[in-house]
Length: 546
Image (cartoon, rainbow, N blue to C red; front, side, top):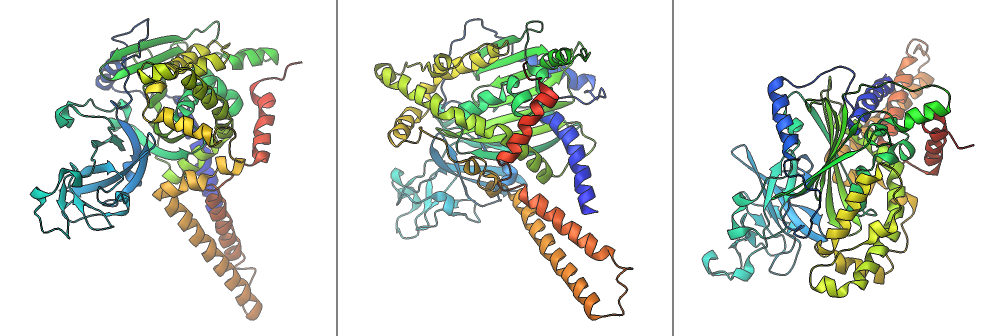
């Protein structure tokens, strides 16, 4: 019975959840009321209000942006947690006062002896206390207590203060601002990028997270915004709705304002490559609605949304992505499936499906890293003088890649943005040079390391940890009950085994199902799974050339 329930949930989640991953609306026209439609139309129109035909990223400052570092629901209340941003560790804690949540965030280093503040605790008064010698700090980083010092807190040296950074909660994410703040006035900072549908009560939201220690954050973002890979790497035809073709050209609009650079890509939501494949197979083309547009929006440097919208800018589904630049050559991936679903699937189910989906192209993206980052290092070494002057532009990607697809108009624009700005990313240049010197850019780790779901997801997601513990409990209980029933039947001849045959079957099935679910949170995409996926390409996606 449990197995049947799980299979039913998987069937529903695959149908609805995959649509969410690709921003695909359901068959019904479940759109917003007029008032909400006007609000969203205004929001998306604002992205284009300062369109420029000549991009200028000279003033782009990576330190002057908000960065997501964790889902708030994945951080235990009053428990400091270590997060990373631009190769720097931070200690983050969420506190609650009078039903109001707030965030404490500091560089993860106590000024006293350099110990990790993330190993400490939050006091009853809301201060972060270092576990090493008990120094305590307020939200601004001021040292408020040194137990061993006879001096008053007002007499402590300014060197005794922790380095606090601005932090907020926004749409379920914890955001950090790594750069300086004018007059230390956080209210002057812009808001983080928003997804309007996440604030609409008509939409349900399910969230996932995964670390990618072998994929640079720029490569991950470029992969998210490249729809052409979806039909082959994922064998998913819905990606075709966001690709371009000679018949259906791509419209790219850009804006430059106080929030930085934003880009919106629009293309008719038609099947281009799939229809071409159908013609090759002699099946004829498939008609699609003509007034639906595939929209990919990038809010540099971390946020992407993908959706299909009607003429009024309305949609039933949005897939939102955020990529945290944890460090050079690594990243943390966040996504939210936002849609008008009949019910909200359990979070663990969405995690299992998304991990399976992500595994399909993770090795491919990781394999890009050595040549791309080595090319970036080469450009940096050739432009040392420009780097010292702060004006270096890295031409690694646009010189390395070959652009032939109509969709590459979008991909090339993103690569050009990286080439123009990455030399200014915090600590990136020195980290790249260090990685080259130590040989870390010459290879990628083995497949089971690149696809280690335990380290990359399970260890950072409390909900998935609870699911695994529950599965282990169900498995043990099922074994005990089944063994006890068999032993009782063997020892007691008066027990009618035929009447109660369903007992071992039920518990054995429950144990098997629990073990199957548990395995979804560990390495589970060997080469055999890859080969199975590859066989689906000529069967379902694209006919092999003759």
